[in-house]
Image (cartoon, rainbow, N blue to C red; front, side, top):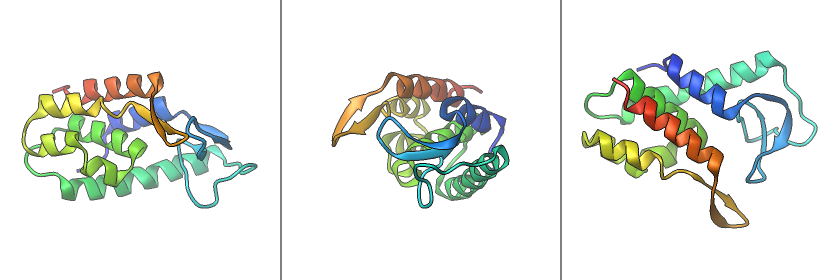
Length: 147
């Protein structure tokens, strides 16, 4: 499967786009649509084109890996919701999550509920509830349950 419009809509809405590197709520240097990692630090700036390209590359890689990990039927909306979740929490966290395991068992309502559990950030080594993440997870759950 490939990313659909809903995946990009969710990612763009909830990540937002900042063309100058900043520290996110957990203190991680971030730029563009939530890009992190090597080369992203204080003072780094991107163009809009760089932000779009980085997101597209990340989403395409996530979609390819996710397609291999899914078993059984998956709607485009379910796939897009998982892409948004995985973009935010990382591929390994996604495929080892209860939400993903429940989905692969065909327990779609349970999977949707479990998606909402990813509503915390780690601050000073402690998991802390985050209202923004909670709202994102509710939006992803809504897309996931759309037929």
